[in-house]
Length: 107
Image 1 (cartoon, rainbow, N blue to C red):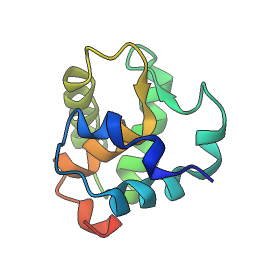
Image 2: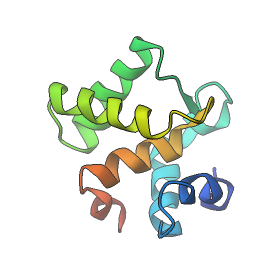
Image 3: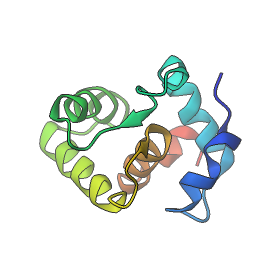
Image 4: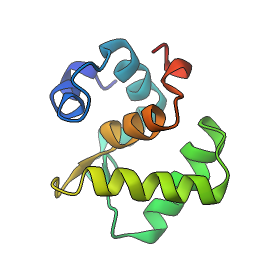
């Protein structure tokens, strides 16, 4: 199982006050996706990848409609633009934070 400590430095680049317990719950949610290097990253240039995030995490976990979710993903892609390899944990954390849904993860 992935440990939040492995991702905290990256998350804190975008939210210095990030709660490790929240990051751990996101790691738990992602589960097996974090065991593979490719699936542990989000590619903003791959629309099918973004569609999976929109239709999976954003719709099911955050309760967003497709339009809101697509806009949220575009915002996080812009925020993380400097990172060539975008951590899925950080990406999902920022989506939840921007949607005001960190509380679902204990934050």
